[in-house]
Amino acid sequence: MPTVFRRRRSEATREVADAFVGFVRTVERIERAKASLLAAVPGGRGGGLAPAEALAGFEAGLLDARREMDGWRAADLEMDWERCSIGLEEASRRAEHLRLKASPEGYEQLYGTLADLLDPLEAFVLALERFDELGLP
Image (cartoon, rainbow, N blue to C red; front, side, top):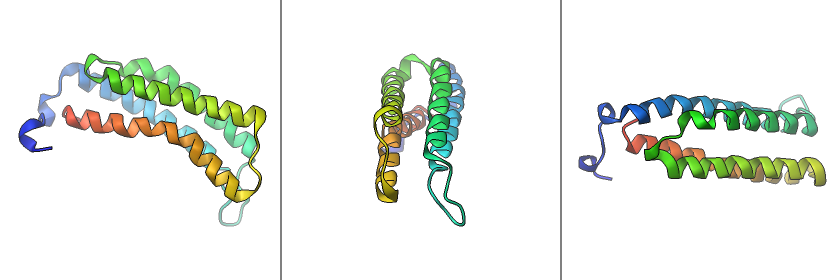
């Protein structure tokens, strides 16, 4: 997008600037959730965290992120907020399904399952792009 159409960073509204602070808190919780989940991936010398334990940490992190969501709800970001809210709900639904009904068999299926769990959280990448369009970060 040409720079003539973009707001400069100093032109972000106060509401958007405040929302960005809440967005960062939410994303920090999501990143912790993702780190917990990815700890199940075997690496180096270890076999990774037990999948059930990693999944429990992921679900707890998503719940923490859900609690932070209202901290960044703003009129200029409503569509992005909704998309992220739906993404969180979908990631939580998938994690619950995995916990209750499915169990990956082998590492190849584990990697695919982890990717499926994380996919709905891509909405937060799009929201970050929207903050950039509005003059932040």
